[in-house]
Image (cartoon, rainbow, N blue to C red; front, side):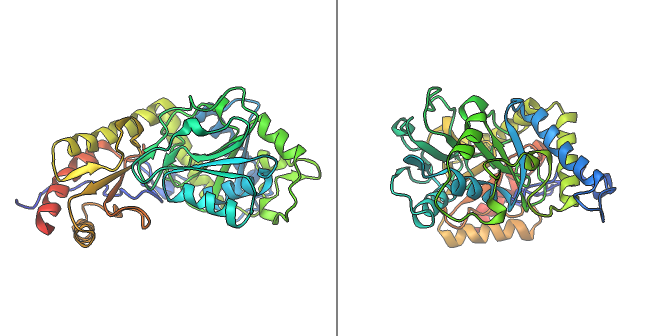
Length: 371
């Protein structure tokens, strides 16, 4: 087949860092905070603004705390694992590499005694009915490297005794998160909002705060992990008084993304954009016998990190990915290094559907070139 003549206007389909919002420009960022201390009045105001706008757009309940923490989503997850786990048994649900990483840290670093692994291979969701409501549970809402998400939180009991710790980094702002089921929720700016890396968000329910203040683990906690001040929650963290120095230009970038999200209609519009984008790839897959969604059950298929399997050997897949990048048709769409060989196409809200539509002929062409 002949090479396509039209290319995506924005061929940015990386699953993290992800595409910037449509119309993005550095010139749009509020630069008043640059060169200023994050402890200054303007610095604190911007950090609080980021928290307030997060609450508004995500519809986070008023009695939940929202904080900006170091080290992206990884830092946010690690600080709660080290702070909160050990009081009771913990169920760790994983079906891709990041969830498995949390299990490794819980077993090998925290060395907890009562850890139950509830797992499934790439493309499948484990049997979540095995989660014990008496236990704490750690899970990813969306498996970024497997393209498999939980379809709902019905498996989480309202009368649970344990706490739920949800890594929602590629789900927040693109999927509906039921806050009443989630005690700890974490994500990073560089996913659905296309923000910059290095900063994480942590959202705590009243139950999570109670656990933090009542349970004192017998392990050292580095400064960047400490959520308490004395025996009580460090309220300053949830007013924008960050544990260490944040990048204020990254904060300005995050606020710009939040403003854009609000301008297009908020959370419902963001979810609709991701759903629409994923449907473009779904239609592409349905019309070809050489590609399939890694997610075996359509009900669990991700609408952000869409992972695809091809009837090609791994070296041919790499050749196809390189060819698409060389042609400036698609950047960074290879499967994650721990995942089965294939494509991973980001369909989050900052991607335009017309760019995905323009990508389709290039996928057909590149496949035919390398096969």
